[in-house]
Image (cartoon, one colour):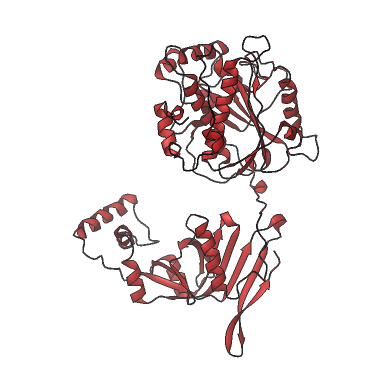
Length: 524
């Protein structure tokens, strides 16, 4: 099976990037899957249609900023669109003179659809309720499925599964009976099927399509509207004219393959991607195709501007274990260490990142992200430039607030208290524990001062690297060192459903001359 995944140079590059060539724990159901190898199919192969139905909750209305590998083509009119005849001719060339096998094309198509979906929803969807429908309408027009169309369905289904498994998404298999009642925000319904180029769905798939259309009817109550993802040509649409009846599926997302078909001009949803990377120069030259370049190993490119996000609709319903008083440590330093260890164990990125808020004599607050570099019963330590803006504000008002936020655990911790510099010896020891590049960077950066450009930094960096190229000790600048905040208040926050969050406040009290901590619950 893995040999199948390594047939094309493009696939090798992509799979290496995704660590799929040597997966650590390949699921048993994928190990045992056999993909048939039918002969080359007749023209019209890429006129196949498939649909994927997601719950709209979170998919389009809730979008987190994320690094995207997909390039964006801002003007849809600047690219080429294929007619029905041209699309059929391209298929013939791909699987004829150019020698593409069905296996290779299915690898590219399946991964293109999966990566396009991931571009919109990679950080939100973690659970999929899957119901697979292999609609294998005959290509001969006699109403009976062909071996080729069955194999096409199985292949593209396999690569959907393979890619989403690589993203560590959880797959939940269901039956088609869930179709009328998909309501959970994290559920998704997948329908994979193939139709002819006539655009007329055959029974029983015509009924299935109407049920999907009905799910998106805003007049239906107590039911979330699904997100429909159509592949290449939306089911029931004409290749060139689109939805002739006006009563067909209106997908929220379209993934065009090879090149967009003319019907894609009628697509009005928020997400249009081109996927596949299987248009060689001979085809592009023959049909005078103006198609966007795929950056790096990206399997998709967005066509048109991304939809504007309704900021007021961005929300998260937190699901977390309750954090009660009897579970809390009596000492807030111990409680912080416990939660910090949880964040490290969860593999969260930079769990020591914290927002530092300071205020100068003018009373104007400012905040920035810094890194925690030490914590004990004496306080929280970080390092910076003593001539920076935050250092100036601390000198004027030696009090500050820290905020840790661990998104993956739905937790945050606030800490407030007075601030003072750490000893010169402590700063010296930490400075020389840093990488030499960071030591030089601390000397180069006169933090918060105006500079003429980035090249100014590079020039000073090169000069210092040359100066200390002999490996001698780099002296710590006098204007660089650490601060320690001694806590006078802790607040531990755990996100809960319906905004009924847990908030436990620790404040110091004196009991018989001994300092202790009082724990109080705050209203969310």
